[in-house]
Amino acid sequence: MFPRFLLAFLTTIGIVTSIQAQGLIGKWQTVDDKTGIVKSVIEITESNGLYTAHVIELLDPEHAGTNPVCELCKGDKKDQPILGLEIMWNLEKDSASKWSGGKILDPENGKVYGCKLALEKNGTLKVRGFLGFAALGRNQYWHRQK
Image: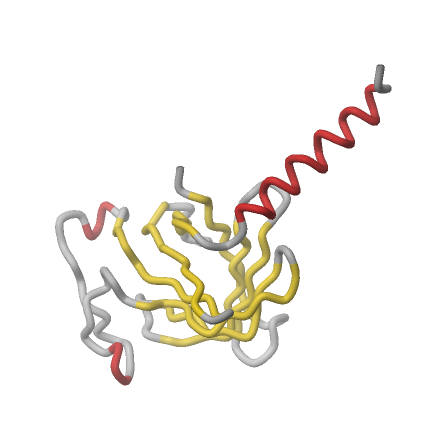
């Protein structure tokens, strides 16, 4: 019979391995880091080693029954509907649980930031948007949609 600490350790490894095996691809609920409100569902996909994300559902009660456009965006994203909008692009996998090198768009202010992602041991996705240096930014924690 296994000692309890060994069983707990093996169980933890199994959980972490299971979470990492799920990877980044899938649907995630975004949570506003300032208000704690669940805002949207984002779908992350991969093609040729690059990861992108699109808005597939708006959950914020402020936008219930509407499909606002990205008025403050620039370039080809200007005035595009938020639903279906690509908000993350060009992310590359660094390790089993980290991605970087990409960009993320905040449709509320139209700004584009550098982006790094890290899959946490508890299954949440740490999304870091930053200007210039990763140290100069902010985090959001997204939750895998069930």
